[in-house]
Length: 308
Image 1 (spheres, rainbow, N blue to C red):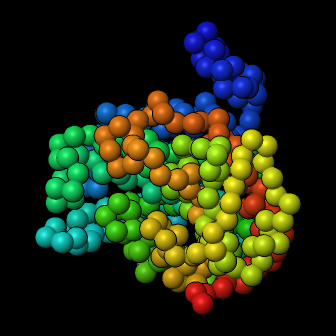
Image 2: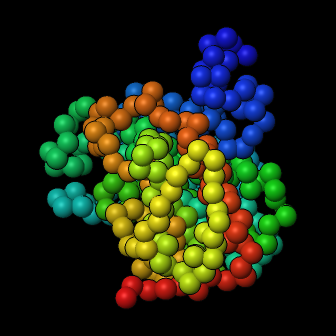
């Protein structure tokens, strides 16, 4: 291991051995975000080369983990959508299944797209500038891949299947999740719950991580009871609706959870770069997520609660 990497690990408060052996781990999270938020991908814009490159990257990672495609032999679910004067914009979701032979499935999702060079946003953002989107939402994709690695390691031991989805077109109106819930590749009434991760890479210890959807299932209060993660503070919000991909699942009567570390000065700006990621804290957030997922799996079914 290079000395510089070792120093980085020690500075983050963990040994090199710990970082290599644990899932989730901060080194892997940082590496994923470094790639997805690099200038090479030019902000992963929808209908831009970098966005397509990002989708292929996620599909490769799913394949390396041994996860199965669910759309025939393809990891992709292609679709088009309209936005304002822009018609038939192409995008795609990236999906993979961990089949544990169970009757019900847990969906874990994060959107991989960002603003790109802002050409589809009608001047709202500086056109031509690269918006790398490290926190929004390379951080969520890193989390998606880490949770996939964790549950692949436990394949066959869990009482639920896992469907991992990287959504396209989120920044342009939650398009990927809107399309998936209208054209599901597995029955929505067999979904235990959907966990969405959107901007989980800039942990603020004063705020903690917000977890939305607490009111979307009768069992969530019991699932959350006594759950703690060292170094990670969290608070809950009842709302199942929201400005990210869990919203469309909630509107289709699926219980949801939504992880979000909050806004910051770099939100939707070209300055949302990988060197600002709090990778060790994100690993802790994912450990918290694993606790909640595992506790939710002790219930055979979660009972959806609609908006009151």
